Image (cartoon, rainbow, N blue to C red; front, side):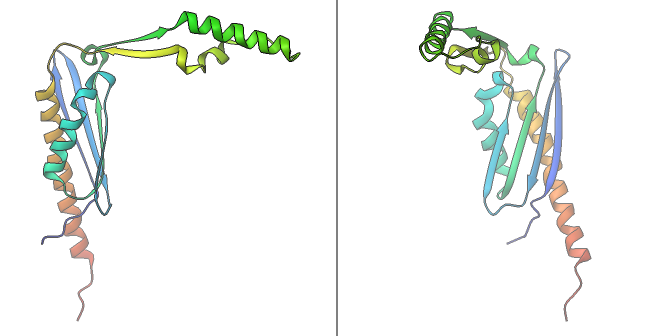
Length: 163
């Protein structure tokens, strides 16, 4: 069995309608294969395909895949607020303050931290972008594998020979 280095880096890019998709892949030593993928919200549907593609070429290591693209390709992201829930929250906080003799007013920071009242929704772009993303992943993997092989050859050259 041929030993391979597990440390490396690769990057790739692809342009669609003057918008650039970029992929960076980093790997470090790890006993097993652990692939972590970070994508813009509109690209989440491709995460499993990305993991599968990486695992076809890499057997071991902690692999981080970062995909970036402008908003024009990733879909539309909007914040929604449940106004009724916010009103109940404010009313409840004021009731508790009055009941327990607490002073102070409700600040916007308190409302912003009330997560159940807010949701972030991404409407995916209707364009199918797997092929350009796949091209970026392949470019990145080619560089990563090449770097891992070079590192291994440097390790073997620098190791002293044993009698």
